[in-house]
Image 1 (cartoon, rainbow over the protein chains, first blue to last red):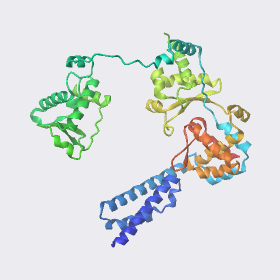
Image 2 (image 1 turned 120 degrees about the horizontal axis):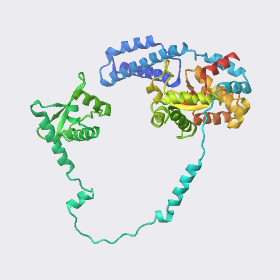
Image 3 (image 1 turned 90 degrees about the vertical axis):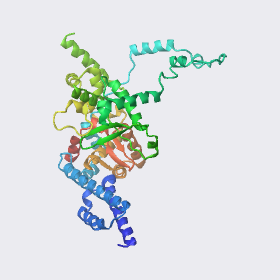
Image 4 (image 1 turned 120 degrees about the vertical axis):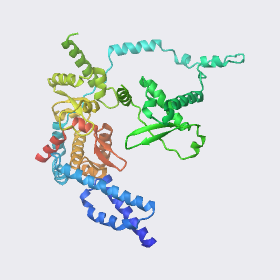
Amino acid sequence: MSTKEKKLNSERLQRVIQLCKSVEDRGIDPFALDVDDIIVTLQKYFPEWESPEELALDAEALQCLASVIKNQGDWVKHRSTSLYTDPFLLEEKIQRLDKEELAELFMEVWNPIIEQEQISIPSLAEALKYWQALLPISERWQKNGSLMVETGATTREELVRLRILAEKTFLEELEAFWKELKQKVGEAEKILYWDFVGADTYSETMDRAYMTSFLVTYGYATLELLPLEEEVYIKPFKEPRSKLAEKQTVSVPISVSSEEWMKWKEGRQ
Amino acid sequence: MTRKAYYARKIKRAAQLLFYKRHRKPGVKGWELKNKLGSDYPKILKVLDGHLEKLDLQVKTVFEGEKPAEKPTLEELNRARFFITLRGGLPSKDAKMMGWRIDDIAGLATAISYLISKKGKAPREEVEDLLRTKLPGWRVDMNMSRYIRAGYLAEDKNSMLYLDWRTRAEVDQKALVDLILLK
């Protein structure tokens, strides 16, 4: 097939995609589309597609066509329900009714929501109490003049006490956690994610999951996913791999919900 | 506390939660009721509904998707939204008291019934054309915005109109179509 022909065919596919999308977006009758004809067209063009772009276009067209077929199913389902009415018949009836009649019959089937907005004496009293205790805005927004303080040196203990510094730095904590992982894994080289992360309490489990995510991100360990068995293993590296950041990495979402934790805990018992 | 006193207290609390507007949208989610009233809240709502019947009011449940064909599960109820609505219809002269002109209501009835017949969605243009046959153009545009703002209709980026949460809560859709066809 010549390049020109290919271009023409891919334009045809794009038109098919647009047509299918307009059924979805504009609420057009999905049976107005000749699905069989489109399938024949897709079949005819498919052997000619070579590049990933062309194959992606073919896949998109197929997906759009599938949604049209789903729409046809919904359409038939709707027509078989008691709510279905021929829009033309209904339009005709609406045209014949006058405004008063329409409003009258709508009032028969309309049950408006009742909602109230009302202040109560206890809430007023509460609000007054708050108002009395509230400082005037000039006092609340008063700018304190900067205090002159003698400069001096502080100690690490003082900074830990003020919670400016943690007792252990994050990296120290991470390395201790990495050592723990290596110990737990031992000769086996890997350990089930939940067996490492799971702890006696849910909050501790969350902490461990948080630290584990950093172990993987900073190249201290890696994850092994077994999708068929639905299992996730964590494997520590002997040395941290700093070059990991240069590679293209993927994020792996792992759910650590309380239900999962309970399930793991029950399984362990 | 006796069983009777327990339920009386819970029913009072349920009425407060449902009558008073707590969020931008009226109504209370099932899970909120579960938190405030306990897991037997469906039973409490049933008793409250019985009390409200005497006042021609009702507790209305609007499910997230379509109404379940069988008895709803607790999970479905938790995700549903509960409202208090009128049980019966209103005389049309009372609509004025609620801030609705007869034109507004007729327009709303037309838009809703047309959308129902179109499987719940239709281009705004089509609905507006239908309304323009009986209402002046400037009013059609104004009313349409009002229906959307109130939550009767929703519009997406492609200018398609849908039936929104308030229609599902307040309007008996099947009865509306049947009444129009019977006329």
